[in-house]
Image (cartoon, rainbow, N blue to C red; front, side, top):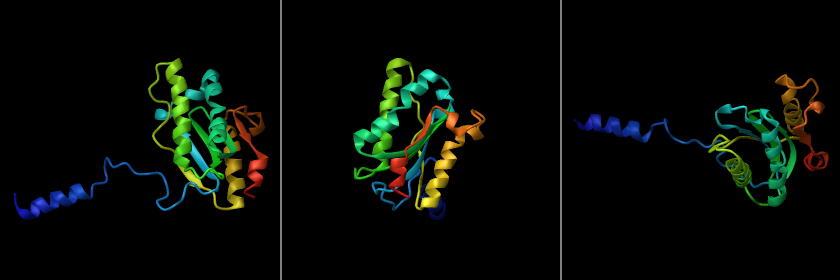
Length: 174
């Protein structure tokens, strides 16, 4: 094998893009800042795990409990059959978003492991969008609240029982 061929193979290995775990987070953003972040957490393989009311009831209070325990703020949430939307802010906790996600996912997974033979409920990581402006915050809240309407689950967003927004928390950022 010639030196040129070895160099080509070395370059392919050094610069490969397959099988690398890429972060969904902004590279230089401080995720412990008191700023609202829209997070979408999907179920493993987009399984409609929360179509069953018994499963939904187990998970529905956990974002609020996790936020309270970690001193985060929840501005709104909507639990859909195969994902959860939540607008969360670290508040004055100084903890990062990943801490919130790890605790929330860990707690919910532990409950289901006890009740059923489930190894994994959630996909790895989560998708996030840092909300930078008041107008953007209002738009994202409307998007989240209307998710069940767009999916044909209810006709009116107010009729969906697994969605809630918290005006006092929202006003902190408007």
